[in-house]
Length: 242
Ligand code: DX5
Ligand code: ZN
Image (cartoon, rainbow, N blue to C red; front, side):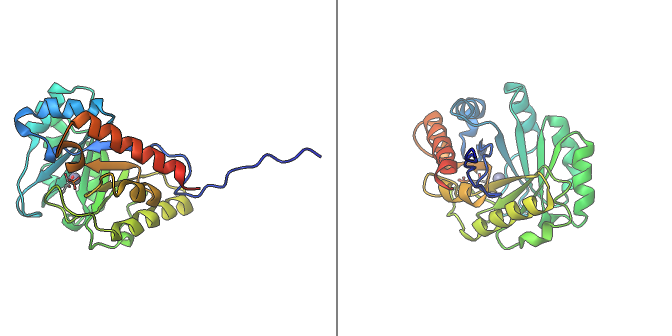
């Protein structure tokens, strides 16, 4: 009898995944934003992560729709992944969509009517996503996992780049990957905060597929090279775990 071919056993976390790098422009030089963003994309980034802060939901202020519109104009083909760290996001979703956002994520903690807000994002032609802070249990997302394009797990408290990675986020990514498999869903898992060469293997092994990185790409040295090395480390992590 012919021998059965050996099938490599894979779990929800380790099956072949499309790992993508999302350079976070928060750490770019805003005086030369388009050039920095372009360099990060040339280094292997496939999304541009755009951090929007209002000084209320988080203790910092960053950018609004005009900057998204300028990025859209400078980089017509880039996927703009807009992470809204703002209160009452419903008031601003139309403006970000109009400015050229492709993906819009909102914080679970900021949305009283989360289902409505996610549907609002979709109604404006953008991919809806939900974000959770480090102190928010992943189970709070159970009722929206079937309507989101991705879930963003914060691995720092939102507000600033260059913070230390919070390891508790790993368990949440793992839980999301398991829930996705058991419920037959297909949202993607994104991680944001402290992703760098020393943490990237752990986040990929925990289940993250969309890797946001600011300081590790724009903080020092050559942007293209930093992006290339980080993506390479992420992709080799997928091969190390069986
Ligand atoms: C923090 C932002 C992040 C930030 C990540 O609130 O949401 O996107 O840019 O920066 P790093 O990668 O430097 O931790
Ligand atoms: Zn972010």
